[in-house]
Image (cartoon, rainbow, N blue to C red; front, side, top):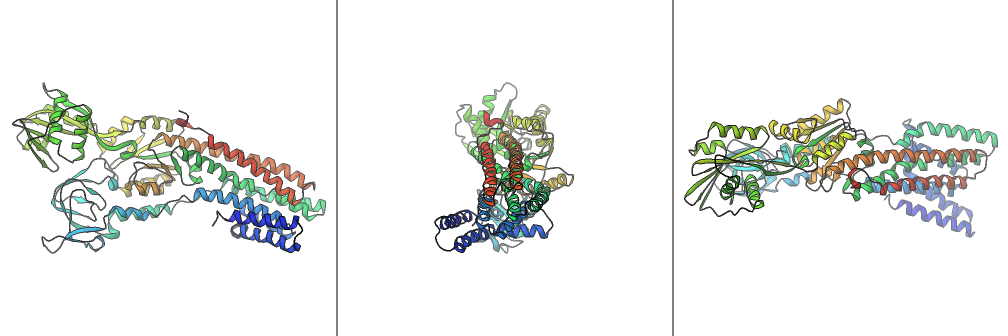
Length: 618
């Protein structure tokens, strides 16, 4: 609707002017068209202005309402319509940008499957039913590759479950009998039978939805800079208009003062600069969902960043191969790749990927067996290869010396997952696996600190050792480990109550509540989940953390441009007020003069389209 208002108002003004210029029809027709244009285009402004007056607030809407009422009262309908047209164009421009808001957070629930395989009453028969029909106490069967539809406890089976979207853990979690599982998570390797403990709105996934909706509703808008200026400017102009009327005795002189001072340029000083800044960022893969976030970005003093998928890639990678005794690292990796060749476990895939990168030929094992949550065994050339945890190798009869225990412990202290490799019952080495850190992360952190972000804190669902190792490597100020979604939300609340302006960067569903509540939520768009992108205020479409630096740099430029635009507006207003007070401007000329200020503001803001910040210059 807002996008067609300027067009209709413009057409009515042109028709009104043409009828008057050609002297077609009675005067009340062309005047009536201008009045209709004023009322149609200015209706929302009038309503907002009167509401602000009723609430005892002086805003741009109040100023515009006063100017329009005065203009219409003396019969200058076309002048009033021109003002409305200018304001409607500014409003449409701002709305076009700001209407790119969050879609329904309910899309989150699409993660949970619509159907579920259920066994009831102790029966072995499996029945496929709607997930909404599953009841507490039902046993749900989830096969490899399927998403878990409910919260529950594993009663049979073993598997690795990727629950990063819910808990933020970077590595799949091994689930055995008695383990807790969450709806919406992915069962990767084995068949699970799960006794339902929570369904519908009680599941962890649904609670995250609720937390996001609740957090989004707590954000309060920041008062427009133009409104803050108008608080003292409107009374001043009213005094000047009254004095001009007393000295000239002509009501049109007073109205001209109001019109030339009408804050159209003030009103578009913010939206035009914001729109240009947002457009600039969009061309560089940063999508901003509202001008308020450009203003807030400059004030961020605490930046919270999710680890998995943000500071890191969220994919396990072999970071070190340690060989024991006289064995070579290449041979250790080859033996591990042979054993893991047919495994679908994420850690196994990281091993086979590393072997491929090293151009290692990996023959097919003669026998292959997985023990979920522990390790794998394989046969090659009459020898048994074992790959897995300490306990797994020890249970198979492999002797684990103190030296090997120490080597595993050292990897664990660095936040890595260590798997041991044994060949023919003899330990030959270990492979350390960890979530890979994004290459630009250290540079981005250093740049943010240089821009004045006082504190950068990493949040993660991973354990304390992993979090500490990553935090030390990338150089963040602090970290919080083993956090659930509601705990991240509570941490944001705590900081805000302490008076901090909080920014939050994340990519997963587990980040959504904190992204929604933070003063500025930033999502990693390409790798991030849809819900994180929809919840966030800013989206990095190419997952480059340096774009956060660009965004915050643009924030500073936009705020500076807004202040410069307001300065231009003041200059035009001062000159116009002097001319109007001296009776040198008619109401129509007053409108044209103040429109010149609008043009200057638009041109000033347009310069932001080609402005460069930070790494955009590289």
